[in-house]
Length: 484
Image (cartoon, rainbow, N blue to C red; front, side, top):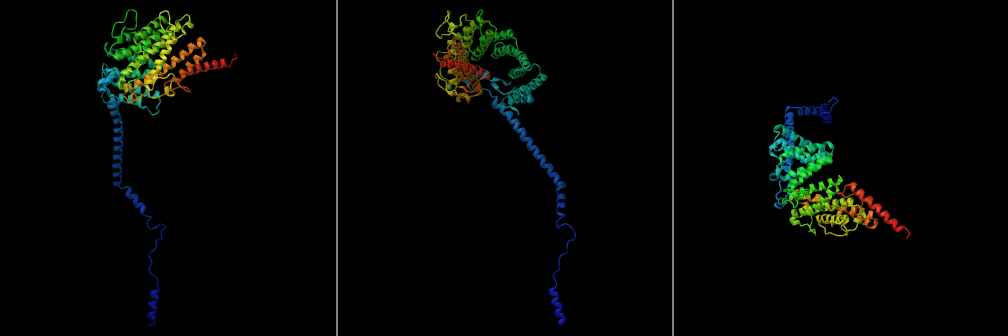
């Protein structure tokens, strides 16, 4: 009995059985990563990897293709869309827009170029207007030229007589002209020359291209050839026989586009005659041109409701101001008694206004145009924003057929105002009137930029005005400080 109790007590005190210990050096779940690796490297994983990679690649490619083609659709349908405004068409501002092959009525690019050719032309437009990775102006033009050149090569290989080639050659020549290197100018001249026969004699574009050939001939050092081209452009745009021995027609042509072409060609001829020291011929041309393009006595305010008509009126008025500046320079240079030309009221024996009167008239016309294009009223003292103020909102938001010529006219009017006032100051300086000269130079700086060149002013022009202003100011201060 006692023995049984002792055995039961010992049984109650015996510890519970413990699980068998692991006598290796690894934890119990150390084999789990091995199984995971086996699962990862299973055939199912590779199938999924290939599937998802293929889907991702296709999706990425579709996004890229959609983006690129979307950009091309935008350029074709919107950026190069034809002009819709009838008023703009009536004044032929739509003809001032660059033609990328589609023509005035259809716009866009030429479908005869095919898929690759049209894409090359649009890529040229994109690099020129949207920029490249470096975003340098020179690189934009170089890439634009490269795309156009390839499009021309492709189309020439298909059909050397294709009618799609002349617009491309004109666009490429325009790009080369802006690059400006001697070899580029010579190549641009050849391209314009090659494209010229594609335009009929009575087409509005032919005189414009002829005038371009004159510009390029002058830049590559062929002044006599340039004069011949400009004379041909004058005859072509005048749409009538010129008076015997004269370069200027008796009346303006009916078409506004021809009027602007005629104006540009006559201005180039005027400058060429003066540069070659043929002052008598230059003076005669300038007098005839001033009679032909005489602006209204009082320039009307810019009518935003009739922007196309007002812009054309302002264009011709500004070109008349340029003829006045040319005529003032030629008349002053031809005068045997320069001191007799300084009075604004004095007239020559022939009844022509003095150089100073011509310059101040040109300055006032240019100022009125520049201020009106900014939505400002004319004042005797230009406002601080005159040199860099924005274009009228109506013009700035208009189609490119109006917007680009408006911005160019505003730039040209500012520069001609500064030039006219600078030349007026030089006339007063030669006369010995430093006080009036200082006022003229200060007025020129108001249009060129008071402290630094304005965005529309070339640095070389600003430096000339600033130097003249500084010299005149020193002379005036010296006279004030001198004992009486």
